[in-house]
Length: 112
Length: 114
Image 1: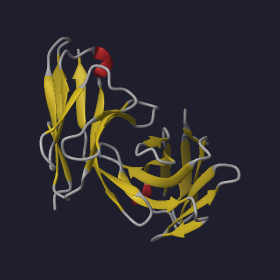
Image 2: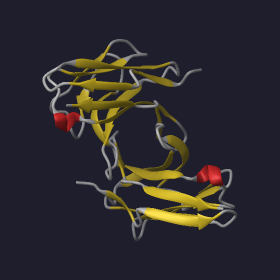
Image 3: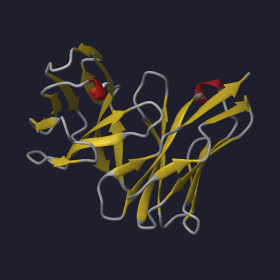
Image 4: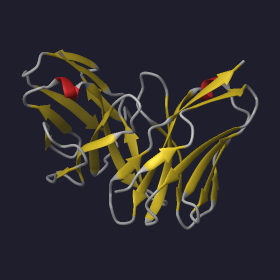
């Protein structure tokens, strides 16, 4: 079956620095990927998505990079702010399957 | 728009009790989902409904039933709660966008089964 994993369960960065959160997926047929942010006590919040026909997509202060060769996905957050402290999940959809498979999450802590 | 709403926010049950978790969305989305989230694990799909009138099992359906009451509402029922069902439950709905089908989540229901 498909699995989606994250390289590090926790990440601490200084305020103002850039953050990079990594994710690996196992299903080479995955064609759609999403990053979610989950603050304590809240539901996951959509950040950015990317299709498999793209390598890079940018949003406001966030960039997602997709490397299909090694089945790796990353989320870059520019100028990290205290409000960015949260758990970040990646999710992938495998080919024609409607369901998303979620990673276990990386806890991002922004240090003052 | 309220987005996806869930009730109750918190619930404590005794083993063997039953309850229904309610979910509603006001975004006119066709698809709706129920997930559970346990510490250190990713979200796991319990059931989903691709459209009004249809439901399908997800990864962990045992011990649960669902009803897609109408396009807006999708409920999750625990007929006989067990301690293993202690979890945080999230409902989501989705819309197909240019990239794919993006899911939007509710705030969650925290369930403790004693």
